[in-house]
Figure 1 (cartoon, rainbow, N blue to C red):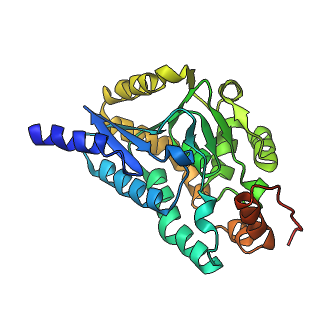
Figure 2: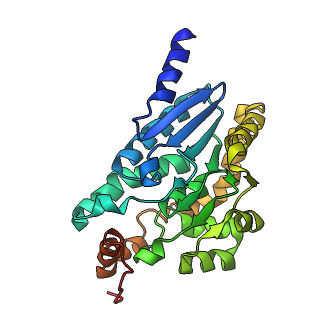
Length: 272
């Protein structure tokens, strides 16, 4: 028992890690820990996040998992496009297929309930992670957007399927096609967020939900999640590595989007 406590303390205090892990009884908290970069996702984050998620899946003591972002400005601002500056198409494809998609699949295939504690900004790939959560608790300063279209790409990890299932076809198309960012109040109104709380109470509310789940029969909880997700799985399997996603990644517009992002200017797209 003492060794377990020491291990958890190490995991909690290893603040140099890009993803942190802490545990309290039957609940684990996973924290994206790049506040200086708005908790954006690079290869190191994806690799460690997958490792942690796989470990928690195999840990019989854990019954629910909370995922959040360090600080109060951002849950996750999406893919760190700065990492891709200068990458060839082959290198980008390798990053996506060997590191990014396997991590997203681990999140998607998680058999235990995943609760998103959405603090601040949640964009692009960060919004994808929020959508992969079974329950979303948002801070009152949360903002959400699938903004990929602004950079001439599409959400490639299932948002085009998950968002309509949550908020309806018309609303989802509007958000996906415009890249519009919504606030916490609108997110709660349209059914994207289950709860909205003051920032200071965000983790407390997430723990409250996780503890309620943890009090129930673990087998029943897993089977309920499986039953609810079963119908959606067939379509979601097509979202990873889809032809639509591949078509975007081989365009001049995608390269222009990345260049404009790094040069902090508005992109000029030509449809090529």
